[in-house]
Image (tube, rainbow, N blue to C red; front, side, top):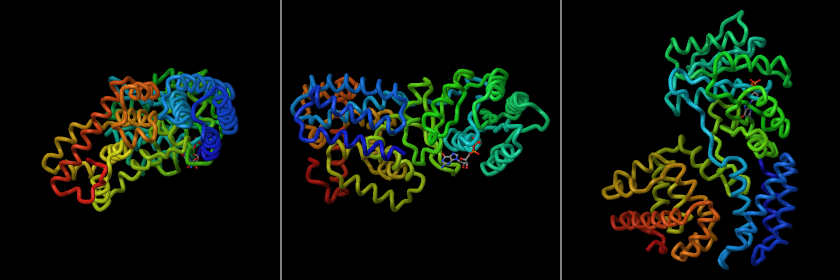
Amino acid sequence: MFQSLTQRLSGAFDRFRGEKELTESNIEEGLRDVRRALLDADVHFQVAKDFVDSVRERALGQAKIADKGVSASDQFVAAVHHELVELMGPEDARLQMAKSGPTVILMAGLQGAGKTTTCAKLARLLVTKHAKRPLLVAADVKRPAAVEQLRVLGRKLNVPVFHQEGLGPADVCERGVAHARAQGNDVVILDTAGRLHVDDELMDEVAEIARRTSPDDQILVVDSMTGQDAVRSAQEFHSRLSLTGVILTKFDGDARGGAALSLKKVTGCPILFLGTGEKIEDLDAFSAERVAGRILGMGDVVGLVEAAQDKIDETEAQAQYERLVMGSFTLEDMLAQLRMIQNLGPLKKVMGMLPGVGQQLDNLDIDDKHIKRIEALCTSMTARERLQPDLIDMGRRRRIARGAGQDVGAVNQLLKQWKQMKQLMKVMKKMGMGAGMGSKAK
Ligand code: GDP
């Protein structure tokens, strides 16, 4: 995914190499490349046009306030990054959970999009990450194979599957919800019928199911490999349902990325999750920030660390810990280390047991949102500022805050946290745990 888009964009950024500052004319040239790259990636043309307009506005704004320490290339990349996050997010969407009674999740989609598989993936996620007791309802009554497929997946997951022969799809769903209530299931996932194409019969059927079951979430499952068709079918479904979100499947494939970039803007529906493979655990919460990072070739570091999380063993935890202690103290290191602490439970446990360290760790606010804010601030800095945070005076703080869409207080807070981290390293060093620690950490 995104491979060719990433390459094309990096070509656009190369234009700025050697340019001292952003000017109207070099911005226009860069934007022309960006626009072509987006259209090549099958992004909806209006989306591409609006995107380019907002990058222009942001880049021109940055050109006015830039100081000499920031390269034109850094500024342009930051503008594109910011607008990508805006386009796909900006906030990461979540499932709506019912305040009382079971949460009803209606899953719709065309045949082959990956709907049945995704129902099972979602059930697994709700069990393992949210301690829920879901019930799967097989409502694709026309296709016995679909019912069987869901039963097989349910058995594998140890999640009950409801189905009743001889009933219409809306009846099956309604009874499924009643069954969940009676059995104490707190989430009901309705696997509705798919078709090869959107047609009136299908739409009437899902609309009737929605009317009878009042779902908290109405989710469309779309295949990212189908590009603009995915966007079109989302529009059609949205005209008949009140979609609350979309799940993009086959994100592991070599789709050009147009659907991911256009969906939110064209349909107004947020992307909730990404299907990243055929296995039942291959479902990731969608993060605009993370996907934007990936598109820009900045690496999906958070994703990689999270994927490693489940597999990590004690030896690896020790190795991570040593890397942490040996690390030097730039803001980049700090960010990487915060991610490690956040993601590597065992590491945090090991460190928390050290006298004097547990307390310091508690002082560091390292939830997901916080890390994202820090990432945005770091992206808004020049490489030199990240390497030598002491350089960051008031003028630079203002510029960094503006580039990241945050206030100066956030930059102050980040620098304070960086100092705390340095302090933490000092404690460890004193305890003889920092042998070989980088000389930059004072
Ligand atoms: P449905 O007709 O919409 O219910 O689709 P299915 O759930 O039967 O999935 C159709 C095919 O897509 C199956 O072969 C799935 O294994 C595959 N599939 C579903 N989601 C993904 C995904 O995220 N990545 C990949 N590579 N394959 C997927």
